[in-house]
Length: 515
Image (cartoon, rainbow, N blue to C red):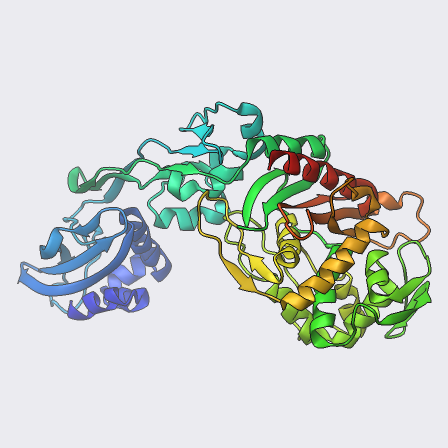
Protein backbone atom coordinates (compact mmCIF):
# COMPACT_ATOMS: atom_id res chain seq x y z
CA UNK A 1 0.00 0.00 0.00
CA UNK A 2 2.93 2.32 0.68
CA UNK A 3 4.21 1.66 -2.81
CA UNK A 4 0.78 2.31 -4.31
CA UNK A 5 0.53 5.65 -2.49
CA UNK A 6 4.04 6.76 -3.48
CA UNK A 7 3.46 5.75 -7.10
CA UNK A 8 0.33 7.90 -7.15
CA UNK A 9 2.21 10.95 -5.94
CA UNK A 10 4.49 10.51 -8.99
CA UNK A 11 1.51 9.80 -11.30
CA UNK A 12 3.13 6.46 -12.19
CA UNK A 13 -0.10 4.76 -13.26
CA UNK A 14 1.63 1.71 -14.69
CA UNK A 15 3.29 0.97 -11.36
CA UNK A 16 -0.03 1.50 -9.56
CA UNK A 17 -1.76 -0.89 -11.92
CA UNK A 18 0.96 -3.47 -11.28
CA UNK A 19 -0.04 -3.41 -7.57
CA UNK A 20 -3.50 -4.79 -8.43
CA UNK A 21 -4.17 -8.46 -7.97
CA UNK A 22 -3.58 -10.63 -11.08
CA UNK A 23 -7.31 -11.22 -11.36
CA UNK A 24 -8.07 -7.50 -11.43
CA UNK A 25 -5.27 -6.79 -13.91
CA UNK A 26 -6.98 -9.26 -16.23
CA UNK A 27 -10.37 -7.55 -15.73
CA UNK A 28 -9.20 -3.96 -16.06
CA UNK A 29 -6.34 -3.14 -18.39
CA UNK A 30 -3.72 -0.47 -17.84
CA UNK A 31 -5.33 1.91 -20.33
CA UNK A 32 -8.75 1.68 -18.71
CA UNK A 33 -7.27 1.93 -15.21
CA UNK A 34 -5.28 5.04 -16.17
CA UNK A 35 -8.31 6.63 -17.80
CA UNK A 36 -10.39 6.11 -14.65
CA UNK A 37 -7.77 7.79 -12.45
CA UNK A 38 -7.28 10.67 -14.87
CA UNK A 39 -11.03 11.19 -15.14
CA UNK A 40 -11.35 11.44 -11.37
CA UNK A 41 -8.41 13.86 -11.22
CA UNK A 42 -10.01 16.01 -13.91
CA UNK A 43 -13.36 15.99 -12.11
CA UNK A 44 -11.71 17.23 -8.93
CA UNK A 45 -9.38 19.63 -10.83
CA UNK A 46 -6.51 17.91 -9.02
CA UNK A 47 -3.17 19.73 -9.00
CA UNK A 48 -1.20 17.59 -6.55
CA UNK A 49 -1.52 14.88 -3.93
CA UNK A 50 0.85 13.22 -1.52
CA UNK A 51 0.49 10.52 1.13
CA UNK A 52 0.71 11.71 4.75
CA UNK A 53 0.20 8.64 6.91
CA UNK A 54 -1.35 5.18 7.16
CA UNK A 55 -4.39 5.61 9.42
CA UNK A 56 -5.34 1.96 9.81
CA UNK A 57 -5.24 -1.50 8.27
CA UNK A 58 -8.20 -3.64 9.23
CA UNK A 59 -10.43 -6.26 7.58
CA UNK A 60 -8.45 -6.16 4.33
CA UNK A 61 -8.90 -2.40 4.04
CA UNK A 62 -6.08 0.10 4.31
CA UNK A 63 -6.94 3.72 5.09
CA UNK A 64 -4.26 6.20 3.99
CA UNK A 65 -4.41 9.94 4.61
CA UNK A 66 -3.51 12.15 1.63
CA UNK A 67 -2.92 15.86 1.22
CA UNK A 68 -5.01 16.76 -1.82
CA UNK A 69 -4.81 20.12 -3.59
CA UNK A 70 -7.27 21.13 -6.32
CA UNK A 71 -7.55 24.14 -8.58
CA UNK A 72 -11.23 24.87 -7.91
CA UNK A 73 -11.82 23.55 -4.37
CA UNK A 74 -8.44 24.23 -2.77
CA UNK A 75 -7.09 21.77 -0.16
CA UNK A 76 -9.61 19.00 0.36
CA UNK A 77 -10.20 18.27 4.02
CA UNK A 78 -8.01 21.19 5.01
CA UNK A 79 -4.79 20.39 6.83
CA UNK A 80 -6.06 16.95 7.84
CA UNK A 81 -6.41 15.89 4.22
CA UNK A 82 -8.64 13.13 2.87
CA UNK A 83 -8.69 9.38 3.49
CA UNK A 84 -8.04 6.95 0.67
CA UNK A 85 -9.79 3.62 1.21
CA UNK A 86 -7.63 0.92 -0.36
CA UNK A 87 -9.10 -2.63 -0.48
CA UNK A 88 -6.43 -5.34 -0.07
CA UNK A 89 -6.21 -8.95 -1.11
CA UNK A 90 -6.61 -11.72 1.43
CA UNK A 91 -2.84 -11.95 1.78
CA UNK A 92 -2.53 -8.16 2.07
CA UNK A 93 0.19 -7.89 -0.59
CA UNK A 94 -1.94 -6.67 -3.51
CA UNK A 95 -4.72 -4.17 -4.18
CA UNK A 96 -8.28 -5.12 -5.04
CA UNK A 97 -9.95 -2.71 -7.47
CA UNK A 98 -12.83 -0.65 -6.18
CA UNK A 99 -14.03 2.84 -7.13
CA UNK A 100 -12.85 4.08 -3.74
CA UNK A 101 -9.21 3.82 -4.81
CA UNK A 102 -9.76 6.28 -7.66
CA UNK A 103 -9.61 9.31 -5.39
CA UNK A 104 -9.02 10.17 -1.71
CA UNK A 105 -12.32 10.81 0.10
CA UNK A 106 -14.31 8.16 -1.75
CA UNK A 107 -15.80 5.26 0.17
CA UNK A 108 -16.33 1.77 -1.14
CA UNK A 109 -18.72 1.84 -4.08
CA UNK A 110 -18.88 5.64 -4.41
CA UNK A 111 -18.12 7.61 -7.58
CA UNK A 112 -16.68 11.11 -7.84
CA UNK A 113 -18.77 13.84 -9.48
CA UNK A 114 -18.82 17.62 -9.69
CA UNK A 115 -21.60 20.19 -9.95
CA UNK A 116 -20.17 23.32 -11.52
CA UNK A 117 -21.59 26.80 -10.99
CA UNK A 118 -20.41 29.98 -12.71
CA UNK A 119 -20.91 33.48 -11.42
CA UNK A 120 -22.29 36.27 -13.55
CA UNK A 121 -20.21 36.86 -16.68
CA UNK A 122 -18.31 40.14 -16.70
CA UNK A 123 -18.66 43.19 -18.90
CA UNK A 124 -16.53 44.39 -21.80
CA UNK A 125 -16.07 48.15 -22.11
CA UNK A 126 -14.66 50.22 -24.95
CA UNK A 127 -11.79 52.60 -24.27
CA UNK A 128 -14.27 55.41 -23.59
CA UNK A 129 -16.24 53.31 -21.09
CA UNK A 130 -19.19 52.42 -23.30
CA UNK A 131 -20.53 48.88 -22.95
CA UNK A 132 -19.45 46.51 -25.70
CA UNK A 133 -20.89 43.33 -24.19
CA UNK A 134 -22.43 42.54 -20.81
CA UNK A 135 -23.20 39.11 -19.39
CA UNK A 136 -23.95 35.97 -21.37
CA UNK A 137 -26.54 37.86 -23.41
CA UNK A 138 -23.73 40.16 -24.63
CA UNK A 139 -25.88 43.27 -24.29
CA UNK A 140 -24.29 46.43 -25.69
CA UNK A 141 -24.98 50.14 -25.74
CA UNK A 142 -23.06 50.39 -29.04
CA UNK A 143 -24.18 47.29 -30.97
CA UNK A 144 -22.79 48.48 -34.31
CA UNK A 145 -19.32 48.51 -32.76
CA UNK A 146 -19.86 45.33 -30.74
CA UNK A 147 -20.87 43.42 -33.86
CA UNK A 148 -17.41 44.04 -35.29
CA UNK A 149 -15.17 43.23 -32.35
CA UNK A 150 -16.91 41.92 -29.21
CA UNK A 151 -17.08 38.33 -30.36
CA UNK A 152 -19.44 35.49 -29.47
CA UNK A 153 -19.92 32.63 -27.02
CA UNK A 154 -19.98 29.06 -28.21
CA UNK A 155 -19.16 25.46 -27.29
CA UNK A 156 -15.66 24.86 -25.94
CA UNK A 157 -13.39 24.25 -28.98
CA UNK A 158 -12.07 20.70 -29.07
CA UNK A 159 -8.51 21.99 -29.38
CA UNK A 160 -8.87 23.83 -26.06
CA UNK A 161 -11.01 21.32 -24.17
CA UNK A 162 -8.12 19.94 -22.09
CA UNK A 163 -6.95 23.40 -21.01
CA UNK A 164 -10.47 24.41 -20.02
CA UNK A 165 -11.01 21.12 -18.16
CA UNK A 166 -7.96 21.90 -16.01
CA UNK A 167 -9.65 25.15 -15.00
CA UNK A 168 -12.79 23.29 -13.94
CA UNK A 169 -14.92 23.90 -17.03
CA UNK A 170 -17.35 21.08 -17.91
CA UNK A 171 -17.17 19.97 -21.57
CA UNK A 172 -20.49 21.66 -22.47
CA UNK A 173 -19.50 25.09 -21.14
CA UNK A 174 -20.02 28.01 -23.51
CA UNK A 175 -16.91 30.18 -23.74
CA UNK A 176 -15.65 33.12 -25.78
CA UNK A 177 -14.71 31.69 -29.16
CA UNK A 178 -13.69 34.83 -31.04
CA UNK A 179 -13.19 38.56 -30.71
CA UNK A 180 -12.78 40.21 -27.32
CA UNK A 181 -14.86 37.53 -25.63
CA UNK A 182 -12.10 35.07 -26.49
CA UNK A 183 -9.27 37.45 -25.64
CA UNK A 184 -10.66 38.12 -22.15
CA UNK A 185 -12.45 34.83 -21.53
CA UNK A 186 -10.56 34.10 -18.29
CA UNK A 187 -11.30 37.52 -16.77
CA UNK A 188 -14.92 37.66 -17.98
CA UNK A 189 -15.84 34.18 -16.77
CA UNK A 190 -14.41 34.58 -13.31
CA UNK A 191 -13.64 31.41 -11.35
CA UNK A 192 -16.07 28.48 -11.40
CA UNK A 193 -17.40 27.09 -8.14
CA UNK A 194 -19.82 24.37 -7.12
CA UNK A 195 -19.69 21.07 -5.27
CA UNK A 196 -17.38 18.06 -5.38
CA UNK A 197 -19.43 14.94 -4.62
CA UNK A 198 -18.51 11.49 -3.38
CA UNK A 199 -21.68 9.67 -4.32
CA UNK A 200 -24.34 11.78 -2.58
CA UNK A 201 -21.92 13.23 -0.04
CA UNK A 202 -20.41 16.69 -0.49
CA UNK A 203 -16.63 16.52 -0.22
CA UNK A 204 -16.09 20.21 -0.92
CA UNK A 205 -18.08 23.28 -1.76
CA UNK A 206 -16.89 26.66 -3.07
CA UNK A 207 -18.76 29.73 -4.27
CA UNK A 208 -18.00 30.95 -7.81
CA UNK A 209 -16.25 34.26 -8.42
CA UNK A 210 -18.15 36.55 -10.74
CA UNK A 211 -16.48 37.83 -13.90
CA UNK A 212 -14.62 41.11 -13.98
CA UNK A 213 -15.40 44.30 -15.86
CA UNK A 214 -12.70 44.71 -18.50
CA UNK A 215 -12.00 48.04 -20.13
CA UNK A 216 -10.46 47.42 -23.54
CA UNK A 217 -8.38 49.56 -25.89
CA UNK A 218 -11.07 49.63 -28.61
CA UNK A 219 -11.96 53.13 -29.84
CA UNK A 220 -15.59 52.94 -31.03
CA UNK A 221 -15.38 55.59 -33.75
CA UNK A 222 -12.20 54.05 -35.15
CA UNK A 223 -13.71 50.56 -35.02
CA UNK A 224 -16.60 51.80 -37.16
CA UNK A 225 -14.09 53.42 -39.51
CA UNK A 226 -12.16 50.15 -39.89
CA UNK A 227 -15.40 48.30 -40.63
CA UNK A 228 -16.35 50.92 -43.22
CA UNK A 229 -12.96 50.61 -44.91
CA UNK A 230 -13.32 46.83 -45.02
CA UNK A 231 -16.66 47.44 -46.76
CA UNK A 232 -17.90 43.89 -46.40
CA UNK A 233 -14.97 42.42 -48.28
CA UNK A 234 -13.14 39.31 -47.11
CA UNK A 235 -10.05 40.55 -45.34
CA UNK A 236 -8.66 42.09 -42.18
CA UNK A 237 -7.77 45.61 -41.05
CA UNK A 238 -6.14 46.46 -37.73
CA UNK A 239 -5.23 49.80 -36.16
CA UNK A 240 -2.53 50.07 -33.49
CA UNK A 241 -1.33 52.92 -31.30
CA UNK A 242 2.48 52.84 -31.69
CA UNK A 243 3.03 54.73 -28.44
CA UNK A 244 1.46 51.99 -26.32
CA UNK A 245 0.94 48.92 -28.48
CA UNK A 246 -2.81 49.26 -27.90
CA UNK A 247 -4.98 47.63 -30.56
CA UNK A 248 -7.58 50.32 -31.12
CA UNK A 249 -9.66 48.65 -33.84
CA UNK A 250 -9.84 45.43 -35.82
CA UNK A 251 -12.32 44.07 -38.32
CA UNK A 252 -12.73 41.10 -40.62
CA UNK A 253 -10.74 38.06 -39.59
CA UNK A 254 -8.54 40.43 -37.56
CA UNK A 255 -5.56 38.71 -36.00
CA UNK A 256 -6.92 35.20 -36.57
CA UNK A 257 -5.16 34.30 -39.83
CA UNK A 258 -1.67 34.40 -41.29
CA UNK A 259 -0.75 34.71 -44.96
CA UNK A 260 2.44 35.27 -46.96
CA UNK A 261 3.21 38.94 -46.26
CA UNK A 262 4.70 39.69 -49.66
CA UNK A 263 6.75 42.84 -49.91
CA UNK A 264 5.60 44.24 -46.57
CA UNK A 265 8.26 41.84 -45.23
CA UNK A 266 10.89 44.04 -46.91
CA UNK A 267 10.61 46.26 -43.82
CA UNK A 268 12.30 43.42 -41.96
CA UNK A 269 14.73 42.53 -44.75
CA UNK A 270 15.81 46.16 -45.13
CA UNK A 271 16.32 46.40 -41.38
CA UNK A 272 18.55 43.32 -41.46
CA UNK A 273 20.53 44.50 -44.49
CA UNK A 274 21.16 47.92 -42.96
CA UNK A 275 22.04 46.46 -39.56
CA UNK A 276 24.53 44.05 -41.16
CA UNK A 277 26.14 46.88 -43.16
CA UNK A 278 25.57 45.09 -46.47
CA UNK A 279 24.14 48.27 -48.00
CA UNK A 280 23.17 51.83 -47.18
CA UNK A 281 20.10 53.70 -48.37
CA UNK A 282 22.27 55.29 -51.10
CA UNK A 283 23.83 52.03 -52.36
CA UNK A 284 22.89 51.59 -56.01
CA UNK A 285 21.76 48.43 -57.76
CA UNK A 286 21.37 47.64 -61.47
CA UNK A 287 18.03 48.09 -63.20
CA UNK A 288 16.82 44.58 -63.99
CA UNK A 289 13.59 42.87 -65.01
CA UNK A 290 14.76 39.50 -63.75
CA UNK A 291 17.59 37.92 -61.80
CA UNK A 292 18.93 34.37 -61.60
CA UNK A 293 19.16 32.95 -58.09
CA UNK A 294 20.58 29.47 -57.59
CA UNK A 295 19.82 28.68 -61.24
CA UNK A 296 16.22 29.94 -61.07
CA UNK A 297 15.01 32.92 -63.12
CA UNK A 298 13.10 35.30 -60.80
CA UNK A 299 11.33 38.32 -62.27
CA UNK A 300 9.60 41.35 -60.83
CA UNK A 301 5.85 41.22 -60.28
CA UNK A 302 4.87 42.71 -63.64
CA UNK A 303 8.15 41.99 -65.40
CA UNK A 304 9.20 45.63 -65.01
CA UNK A 305 12.78 46.87 -64.81
CA UNK A 306 13.75 48.44 -61.50
CA UNK A 307 16.75 49.17 -59.32
CA UNK A 308 18.69 52.30 -58.46
CA UNK A 309 19.38 53.26 -54.85
CA UNK A 310 18.21 51.03 -52.04
CA UNK A 311 15.63 53.71 -51.20
CA UNK A 312 14.27 53.62 -54.74
CA UNK A 313 14.29 49.81 -54.89
CA UNK A 314 12.27 49.74 -51.65
CA UNK A 315 9.91 52.47 -52.85
CA UNK A 316 9.02 50.64 -56.05
CA UNK A 317 9.22 47.22 -54.31
CA UNK A 318 11.93 45.78 -56.50
CA UNK A 319 12.20 42.01 -56.03
CA UNK A 320 15.29 41.78 -58.25
CA UNK A 321 17.09 43.92 -55.68
CA UNK A 322 15.74 42.48 -52.45
CA UNK A 323 15.78 38.76 -53.24
CA UNK A 324 19.56 38.76 -53.97
CA UNK A 325 20.11 40.97 -50.92
CA UNK A 326 18.26 38.39 -48.84
CA UNK A 327 20.43 35.60 -50.24
CA UNK A 328 23.56 37.63 -49.46
CA UNK A 329 22.29 38.37 -45.97
CA UNK A 330 21.79 34.65 -45.41
CA UNK A 331 19.23 32.57 -43.55
CA UNK A 332 20.72 33.02 -40.10
CA UNK A 333 20.65 36.82 -40.09
CA UNK A 334 17.30 37.07 -41.89
CA UNK A 335 15.56 34.68 -39.49
CA UNK A 336 17.18 36.32 -36.45
CA UNK A 337 15.88 39.73 -37.50
CA UNK A 338 12.38 38.36 -38.19
CA UNK A 339 12.29 36.86 -34.71
CA UNK A 340 13.36 40.16 -33.19
CA UNK A 341 10.35 41.69 -34.93
CA UNK A 342 8.11 39.07 -33.29
CA UNK A 343 7.99 36.14 -35.71
CA UNK A 344 7.79 32.71 -34.04
CA UNK A 345 6.79 34.36 -30.74
CA UNK A 346 3.44 34.32 -28.92
CA UNK A 347 1.56 37.54 -29.60
CA UNK A 348 0.33 37.99 -26.06
CA UNK A 349 -3.23 38.23 -27.42
CA UNK A 350 -5.29 35.03 -26.80
CA UNK A 351 -6.64 33.71 -30.08
CA UNK A 352 -4.14 35.65 -32.22
CA UNK A 353 -2.19 33.45 -34.62
CA UNK A 354 1.58 33.33 -34.42
CA UNK A 355 3.52 34.64 -37.43
CA UNK A 356 6.17 32.21 -38.57
CA UNK A 357 9.37 31.90 -40.58
CA UNK A 358 11.30 28.66 -41.14
CA UNK A 359 14.38 28.21 -38.99
CA UNK A 360 17.76 29.08 -40.49
CA UNK A 361 18.53 25.36 -40.65
CA UNK A 362 15.38 24.48 -42.59
CA UNK A 363 14.66 27.59 -44.66
CA UNK A 364 16.44 26.07 -47.66
CA UNK A 365 18.85 27.09 -50.41
CA UNK A 366 19.77 30.68 -51.44
CA UNK A 367 16.68 30.81 -53.66
CA UNK A 368 14.46 29.97 -50.66
CA UNK A 369 16.22 32.61 -48.57
CA UNK A 370 15.75 35.16 -51.34
CA UNK A 371 12.05 34.25 -51.64
CA UNK A 372 11.64 34.60 -47.87
CA UNK A 373 13.30 38.03 -48.00
CA UNK A 374 10.47 39.27 -50.22
CA UNK A 375 7.76 37.71 -48.03
CA UNK A 376 7.19 34.60 -50.09
CA UNK A 377 8.26 31.00 -49.59
CA UNK A 378 7.06 29.66 -46.25
CA UNK A 379 6.88 32.97 -44.41
CA UNK A 380 3.46 33.68 -42.86
CA UNK A 381 2.33 36.84 -41.09
CA UNK A 382 -0.80 38.31 -39.55
CA UNK A 383 -2.00 41.90 -39.84
CA UNK A 384 -1.11 42.27 -36.17
CA UNK A 385 2.48 41.22 -36.83
CA UNK A 386 2.97 43.58 -39.77
CA UNK A 387 1.30 46.47 -37.92
CA UNK A 388 3.70 45.83 -35.04
CA UNK A 389 6.65 45.73 -37.48
CA UNK A 390 5.71 49.15 -38.85
CA UNK A 391 5.19 50.42 -35.30
CA UNK A 392 8.74 49.33 -34.52
CA UNK A 393 10.07 51.63 -37.23
CA UNK A 394 7.72 54.43 -36.13
CA UNK A 395 9.04 54.07 -32.57
CA UNK A 396 12.69 54.37 -33.54
CA UNK A 397 13.45 50.65 -33.44
CA UNK A 398 11.51 49.77 -30.28
CA UNK A 399 8.81 47.14 -30.83
CA UNK A 400 5.66 47.76 -28.77
CA UNK A 401 4.18 44.59 -27.30
CA UNK A 402 0.50 44.52 -28.32
CA UNK A 403 -2.22 44.87 -25.72
CA UNK A 404 -6.00 45.11 -25.67
CA UNK A 405 -6.40 46.13 -22.03
CA UNK A 406 -6.91 49.84 -21.42
CA UNK A 407 -4.35 51.48 -19.19
CA UNK A 408 -1.81 48.67 -19.30
CA UNK A 409 1.71 50.03 -19.01
CA UNK A 410 3.44 50.04 -22.41
CA UNK A 411 6.22 47.50 -22.93
CA UNK A 412 8.87 47.65 -25.65
CA UNK A 413 11.64 45.45 -27.03
CA UNK A 414 14.65 46.93 -28.81
CA UNK A 415 14.82 45.51 -32.35
CA UNK A 416 17.08 47.82 -34.36
CA UNK A 417 19.03 50.98 -33.64
CA UNK A 418 17.34 54.38 -33.94
CA UNK A 419 19.65 55.08 -36.90
CA UNK A 420 18.51 51.99 -38.82
CA UNK A 421 14.87 52.71 -37.97
CA UNK A 422 15.27 56.26 -39.34
CA UNK A 423 16.71 54.89 -42.58
CA UNK A 424 13.86 52.40 -43.02
CA UNK A 425 11.37 55.16 -42.26
CA UNK A 426 12.93 57.23 -45.04
CA UNK A 427 12.34 54.31 -47.41
CA UNK A 428 8.74 53.90 -46.23
CA UNK A 429 8.10 57.61 -46.83
CA UNK A 430 9.39 57.16 -50.37
CA UNK A 431 6.87 54.34 -50.92
CA UNK A 432 4.01 56.78 -50.34
CA UNK A 433 5.67 59.85 -51.88
CA UNK A 434 6.44 58.38 -55.29
CA UNK A 435 6.56 54.57 -55.08
CA UNK A 436 3.96 51.83 -55.08
CA UNK A 437 1.92 53.38 -52.25
CA UNK A 438 0.95 56.77 -53.68
CA UNK A 439 -2.73 55.86 -53.28
CA UNK A 440 -2.19 56.22 -49.51
CA UNK A 441 -1.16 59.89 -49.74
CA UNK A 442 -3.03 62.28 -47.42
CA UNK A 443 -2.75 66.01 -48.20
CA UNK A 444 -0.77 67.80 -45.52
CA UNK A 445 0.18 64.58 -43.70
CA UNK A 446 3.47 62.68 -44.00
CA UNK A 447 2.69 58.98 -44.33
CA UNK A 448 5.19 56.10 -44.22
CA UNK A 449 4.11 52.75 -45.59
CA UNK A 450 4.83 49.58 -47.52
CA UNK A 451 2.79 47.71 -50.08
CA UNK A 452 2.76 43.97 -50.41
CA UNK A 453 1.46 41.71 -53.18
CA UNK A 454 1.92 38.10 -52.16
CA UNK A 455 1.64 35.58 -54.97
CA UNK A 456 -0.20 32.46 -53.88
CA UNK A 457 0.85 30.76 -57.11
CA UNK A 458 2.76 31.71 -60.26
CA UNK A 459 0.73 34.52 -61.88
CA UNK A 460 2.90 35.02 -64.97
CA UNK A 461 0.66 35.21 -68.03
CA UNK A 462 -2.54 34.49 -66.10
CA UNK A 463 -5.56 36.59 -67.06
CA UNK A 464 -7.08 36.53 -63.55
CA UNK A 465 -3.84 37.13 -61.67
CA UNK A 466 -5.58 39.18 -58.97
CA UNK A 467 -7.42 36.16 -57.57
CA UNK A 468 -4.07 34.49 -56.93
CA UNK A 469 -2.51 37.38 -55.01
CA UNK A 470 -2.97 38.79 -51.51
CA UNK A 471 -3.19 42.57 -51.26
CA UNK A 472 -1.28 44.06 -48.30
CA UNK A 473 -0.52 47.54 -47.08
CA UNK A 474 0.81 48.83 -43.77
CA UNK A 475 1.41 52.47 -42.88
CA UNK A 476 1.65 54.99 -40.08
CA UNK A 477 1.21 58.73 -39.74
CA UNK A 478 2.15 61.44 -39.13
CA UNK A 479 5.83 60.69 -39.67
CA UNK A 480 7.82 62.05 -36.74
CA UNK A 481 4.88 62.04 -34.33
CA UNK A 482 2.98 58.84 -35.23
CA UNK A 483 -0.54 58.53 -33.85
CA UNK A 484 -1.68 55.34 -35.55
CA UNK A 485 -0.39 52.33 -37.49
CA UNK A 486 -2.82 50.55 -39.80
CA UNK A 487 -2.39 47.24 -41.62
CA UNK A 488 -4.78 45.76 -44.15
CA UNK A 489 -4.86 42.38 -45.88
CA UNK A 490 -7.27 41.38 -48.64
CA UNK A 491 -6.63 37.76 -49.71
CA UNK A 492 -7.00 37.05 -53.40
CA UNK A 493 -7.77 40.67 -54.26
CA UNK A 494 -4.85 41.94 -56.32
CA UNK A 495 -2.05 44.41 -55.81
CA UNK A 496 -1.44 46.06 -52.45
CA UNK A 497 -1.46 49.50 -54.04
CA UNK A 498 -4.89 48.97 -55.59
CA UNK A 499 -6.93 47.37 -52.79
CA UNK A 500 -5.22 47.56 -49.40
CA UNK A 501 -3.54 50.97 -49.61
CA UNK A 502 -6.74 53.03 -50.19
CA UNK A 503 -8.40 51.19 -47.27
CA UNK A 504 -5.47 51.99 -44.97
CA UNK A 505 -5.50 55.63 -46.04
CA UNK A 506 -9.21 55.84 -45.16
CA UNK A 507 -8.59 54.46 -41.66
CA UNK A 508 -5.61 56.74 -41.03
CA UNK A 509 -7.71 59.74 -42.02
CA UNK A 510 -10.41 58.63 -39.57
CA UNK A 511 -7.84 58.06 -36.84
CA UNK A 512 -6.25 61.49 -37.24
CA UNK A 513 -9.68 63.09 -37.03
CA UNK A 514 -10.33 61.16 -33.83
CA UNK A 515 -7.05 62.12 -32.13
